[in-house]
Image 1 (cartoon, helix red, strand yellow):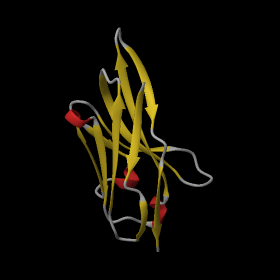
Image 2 (image 1 turned 60 degrees about the horizontal axis):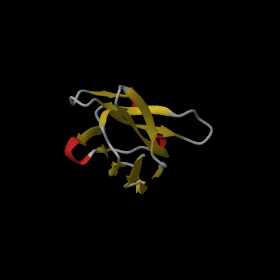
Image 3 (image 1 turned 30 degrees about the horizontal axis):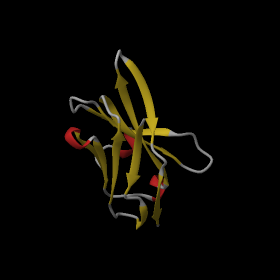
Image 4 (image 1 turned 120 degrees about the vertical axis):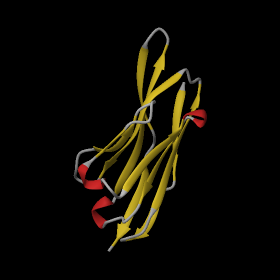
Length: 120
């Protein structure tokens, strides 16, 4: 079993910054892409950013230039640095990881979610 544990959410004023962390633990074989999604009240879950095992990244247009995703493969941890936060960034943020088990099975894992609230 592999678990994802998130930390770093909270309340911040518009224009402020937060850093989210997500660590994978358990019987880990190999983790491919890791990413962050978010879900605001009454809205569908959407992808925020993704980083592949080789380090290439993708961002939602709404966060480009403000958010930075990074990972520490040795620690099986992914980070999301969020700067210039806006009230519309308010949501529950979920960590996501694709865990590969031999002989080539892939599990899609989710963290428990962490609340980010940006006040105006």
